[in-house]
Length: 277
Image (cartoon, rainbow, N blue to C red; front, side):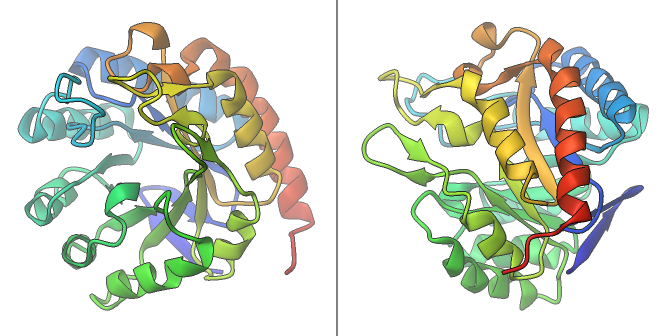
């Protein structure tokens, strides 16, 4: 199994659990710091690692009228401030090749969105930065297709790769999470992440925006962590119903401490007796 070092964390399928969490979309420096500070304290209390995540631009909103975010310049400045003030690694997504180098200078992990996971030039640009690259498996890909994606990043000499499951398209406006995909991707040796909140998203389900079933996000997190994965990805907000993006599938911030305690227990059990395929 490969392990990825980022900041003070070691992320791996046989390492203690890491939680990647934050708001879907950056709103302000104060808001980002509030969520990062709350989550860092909760993760420390639960005994799990913590990475702050947020997006400076939501480039794939359902409709033209969807709020996209603060933009790359202001957004990356906020991400740098969070890393400096909270002391945790940070993650954000990129959408074009020219964003890769700029983002890698100010965050620890650059993320390839699921819709873009086969974009060769984007993967190469991300790999060439030397940063950790988190690749979300497309809703249209089988888990055994991911080695082809991995090889594109590896071709740059960068093997600092994370693989994230976020559900597969299941008819119109629906996703299904196949838990077999997690151990299948673990066979690559790379750390595997479960996106517990986007896997309960209902893409375009509200007409001009996506819906979701946030009540099932903790279920997805617990099920995935019980398989012994490296990390779980969770979007959280103090008031999801007023969040500018993905509110319907986000877990309320005040529910996170109890969930983290459960995830820590599931992780300890899973890592003590790993799945063998």
